Length: 223
Image (cartoon, rainbow, N blue to C red; front, side, top):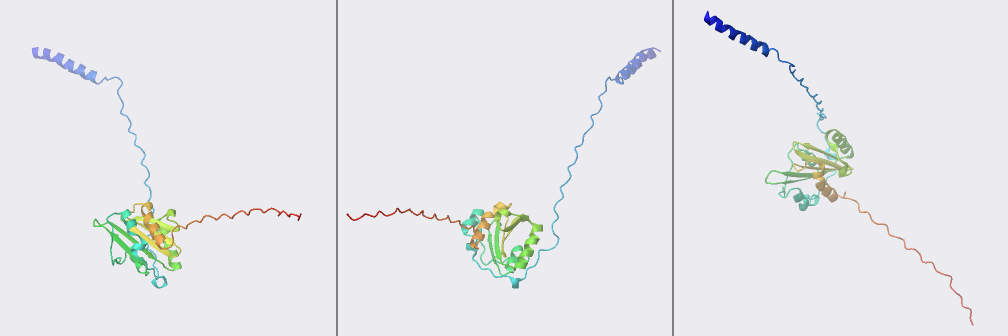
């Protein structure tokens, strides 16, 4: 029985502690978690699934121009100091430059030991074919008014490429150094100048000399 008397206060103390624990005043409610609305993902512009239009080589006008005339060495080196001309270069079948080569155009290539590249090609497809090319590029590329005429730019597999038209003349340039249209502007300008499409010089008008009025001659009467 002495053991029972000592245990009773212990049981009472435990019950009292339990009561105090269950009587916490002003319980803190859990803060509601606010989830920020998810921004709607931008829908990418679908690329055409059809291949580019095919040009008829027989209707094209051959273009022959030296590569160093099209892009002088200093202009190429300004893009990349390691660029060197690939003599006797022929674009691989199915590549963009090969399309201009098939039209009896001029195709040029510069490369570096590190694998950087610059390709510049020019051709003159028929009026019908050049119109079809322009219409197709509207869907595939970004229009670039700063190149003048009708021009387009896009990046394909980390290589920027520009298509520039002056009438039926088709200039095509591509390089892994072209990240945006401005990067290709010096090469495009050089090639257009070599092809005779450079900026037109404005001649200041010649001022017409103002005629000096002549007075009425004085007649001296004989004395």
